[in-house]
Image 1: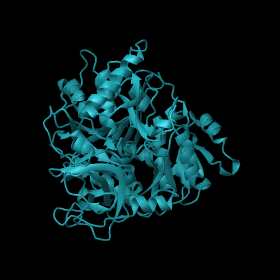
Image 2 (image 1 turned 120 degrees about the vertical axis):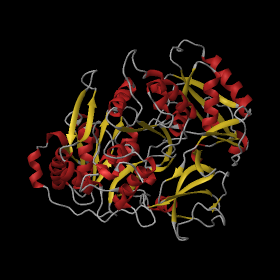
Image 3 (image 1 turned 30 degrees about the horizontal axis):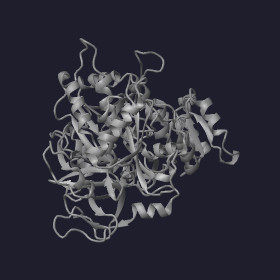
Image 4 (image 1 turned 45 degrees about the horizontal axis):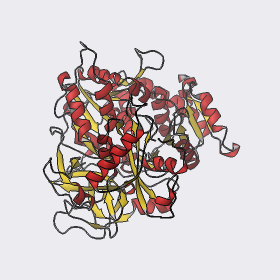
Length: 618
């Protein structure tokens, strides 16, 4: 049982109330994000719900806060305006910068009985196409924004045909007095809460239909797995609020009446010390939980070290790391950098999650440290997890993502015949549970294939599907993984696999080799992919066979270095380590490789830009 729940104030949700007699997660009737907020308004209304550290106006930052009571009033006021412009079930998109107004808009759209569509303001560089796709797909009746972003939002929407142009509501121009006009709306737990658009790392983004039941179930699953989230736990996050991990950081406080401190992704990237300082401040008050992908921990270890003499305390911090196969190097680098500031060995929680499951799937135990197993890389690429010594010439490191959340199931499946594969064999990860989304918005056939899979055959002994009915439908994640010693490991995405000359490779293994080949290459900013030889820029062949291409960003301070030196080093290293020829290797300036909105490498987008010539290479 999670700690800290004995002192839950009367009227707030107790985790015990969300468990059945067997300990399974079952939401009490009527529990939604909105009902949880209303409980907090009624019982801890004067407590801070959300704090935003605004660094856009001054380097020191300005602090803005919302109590639960203030948030409740704002939801009524903004919700009333939404109800005047939209009907029950209409989509309401949030196109706003990070901040308290974004949180208000997201929750107000849900409270009004509409479907929230968390997106971003048009100023976000490099993601206009994703915004176009999401708006065309969701067809919102209303767009919520802020006064600061109003002009750019109107300009962006003006390109749409007038019949498709949504009404724009400016959140921070609505007075609290508008709350009197709000009409109470009944929310069913199986209604759609919001559309979570996927990151677009391997395909165009699609909107996952997340129900109120899925949201509530997944939040409880996370709380039970992390075993830290109570009223003495504070969230700290710079993750964008249109991303599933970002939304989870504003979802946690609704359950237990705590609070989260937020800052913007830009504020973090420009000065990662701000993230560290915010965690340190929370660590002195109680427990702190944060979440980020690999690159954020690596970036912070490089650029976010405390100033000499600065008093930083990370003794009560929990660091969720996920969003892609977890890097043990990122964990070790961060641990070395911040252990002198009290960071415990158990702080890191390697985790696996996916938007189609609302977010959370698995993590390691609360008192566990991150562990790694070294596997034979060639045999892993062929589908078998075979442990070897760390100094084995073909060893690759895989980080455990621990145990699957309570009342959620994950099986490894042969995607061709839909049968469960045994432990230590790589398969597609299939998921089942009440936290799984309902489908993809407006995509019935894709939804059926992805969310309605049937497991044809289970293992006779040791099946990870035990506890689910034979008729259960499963989510096909498109991710590959395996079980080893009872723990889940994620190896990559099917769509990202590199297949050359009949051999299959994980791109991250080739990328790591390329990054280590030359000091000219920026570590963690390499993309490996396949393309038909005849489609490569400058190709003189009609050969359609796939070949390997590597795009690498330059490391800082190497703009004058001869790129040919790095290209030759990359080719030699990849051939020696993996036994495969690199058809083309190129360097690009820092920041040139496309990344998803969560910071992951967008290999698909990089491949597209390279083949169409829009990616300028050296």
